[in-house]
Image (cartoon, rainbow, N blue to C red; front, side, top):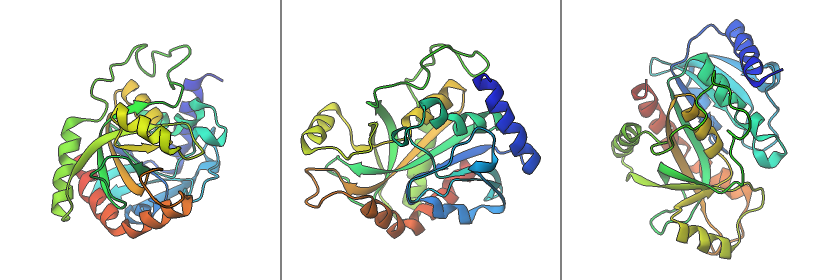
Length: 273
């Protein structure tokens, strides 16, 4: 079965389960799934019940699609993602985002947990992604292009919508936080970076580093969806932090900023529609 047919099979199953037509899509990163409780009137569909979706194996990712409303805005929320480092094909990694695009979203908010590299970043900061660097070693658009999904050579000069960046910055100020914008760099993982690698990434202009988001952003733009991104800085990167890195630290920091993260998204999502 071709990619487009697999996507439409998933779309059909979702529409049968929940007829809501979402305008905004949201991807919740590691430890950030608690926002799902803010979706009103939600219909929750486990990934395992959606054709061609994969199961999630990483702690902090529930593996459910929720369709409901946030501040009156119809949304589709991916509560957790699966990653390239889990052994999935990159086409499978971006499949849920492609399905959201075919469901009809016009805007997509990507969130993640990331290691802080920039000198102004501290654990608990919510960084607005202004651009990204793809060092995962692959591109999700590699291979035969299906014009039903997007053009062969999509423009990536403004992946993260400048208007949405301003929307997030204004919302940050409303909840009493300083708006910080930065460049997110994606590696394939799953091992954390070495101090030497972090020094190299800093030299390349990266402010935060993680193992997701970039393939999803590329595919969303390929399909004409406007993109915004927020990185929850859950730890300082190797060589900056004096402590060994762990996934437990990621989830603990995400939990600590949970209330601000939820308030921020509750303000931002209705303004992205």
